[in-house]
Amino acid sequence: MTVDILIKHGSIIDGTGKPPYKSDIVINNGYIEDIGNFHDISASITINAKGLMVAPGFIDVHNHLDFIFPSPRHPEILKGWIYQGVTTIVSGNCGISPAPIKPEYSKNSVGFWGNLLPREGLDFKWETMGEYLNYLERIGQTFNVAILTGHNTLRTNVMGFQARFAQSKEIEEMKKLLRESIQAGSIGLSIGLAYIPGIYSNTDELIQLASVLSEFSPAPPIVPHVRGMFTKFYDKAIEEVIKVAEINNIPLQISHHAGGGLSRTRKRALRAINEAIERGVKIGHDNIPWPTRRTTVLKIFPAWLFDGGLDKFFERLQDPEIRKNAIDEILNYVPNWPPWEYKYWLEKDFNLEIVINGFKIDKNRKLNNKKLKDIAQELNKEPIDALIELVLEEKGDLFFLSGRPDDPMAEDYMIRLLSDPNCSVGTDIVGIDFNSPCPGAYGGFTKILGKFVRERGAMTLEEAIRKMTSLPATQMQLKDRGIIGKGKFADITIFNPDIINTQASFRDPHQLSIGVEYVLINGEIVLEKGKYFPNKLAGKVLRRE
Image 1 (cartoon, one colour):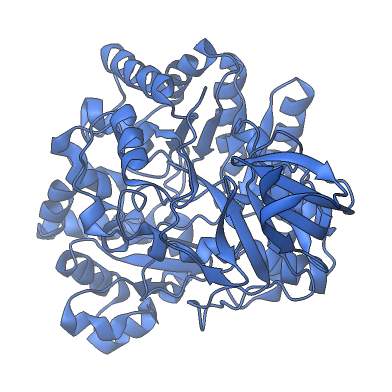
Image 2: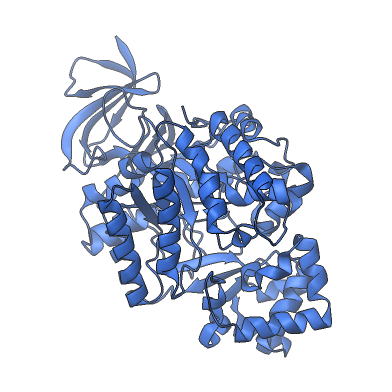
């Protein structure tokens, strides 16, 4: 008997958190057929993994790559994930998914992501979630892909960008679209309460919409980007989503759970989570290994400016009186509940430190990756006036990087968050903008294994692998993924534990990771001794069964 692939002499870390053990792996027809010590077996391909670790393929549980998957260029654009050892990508996060979407709203749907998207993949040859997933299957995928249905997308489909609470009839229509999306294969509901138009919703709307998830068994997760992540109201935001999950008896997966910006707020939020877990609420969360956040500059502006969509936003900003009122609110806003999240970034002149990128107009390209304070000085304007003028010129297609990229204490904080036993790993990348200083697309998982595990000893290797494999697979209900075991899908990453690391940094972000020797997706080798095969579209669209 000849098998497809035989992996010999490796140390297996099976994804469960157990210590490594020496064994061989037999792969046939995309599955792990057997594990043991084999001497008299022939294989079409034999991989000598001596001195290497053999782990389940890593799962990126939080990102925004679902707008990239339809592009014929996605195998090359996303190669940084292959070199990190990623085999499965969960997308549709923060309330934003490519479907279901009506044609008249598709422009606004991608307006927030703008320059990070390959336009040839975004002609929206679909309207429903089923049509979107079918399209991904038809063109082929490098990775295994699982898609959440976004609340913001549902709301846009039903209400456009109206800045008001949803009425009963509108909520029922959203529920219908969500139900159809789950039936078509979407794996859950994401909500983004810091983004337009989800920011306009109230708790009752979320409770009613999430009730659809309880119609399925097991219930799919609700995955929120909560309100006011870095404000003094973070504990209230956590209590809100716990309430939504608990009333509906559904799992809760808190996206990029940062614990709040203040220590006392963080303690209250963590206490609320632990008390809910004791009551039986299923709660998980995820985080990223870089102490920064990157998002659209449109988040800096008050939510009321977007009532009616992006065209209305640009129209209002050109009205002198409205612009004056908006600036006054930006500079003098007093936080209250529900909070306007990105007011945090503007307090105490912090807005001067944010780094702006994404400029496409020739005269503005020189401003890429400069701090707002330096841009304002160069343009001889007040920072807020400079920002508004550039947003209008660039049609909103600008992003900002905030946080403390060079602060060791900030990295210590990220390690504490990632060390929680219920915390899985994501990249939170919107897309690949090669003018951007964001290194997460090239070195997130490898940073954890190289810097946090090997260099700093912050967690064991087997625990780090569990957070990247079986934990997110369980959180997102990805059947037979995330574990090396007989009968499981052959998604496998083989790496050298002595050298695996990120080479990317904020000063030099576009550097591929090192140390990952082989990547197998559904039993096909897509990375071999550091050589990537982008034409091997070995991934599958993972639909909820």
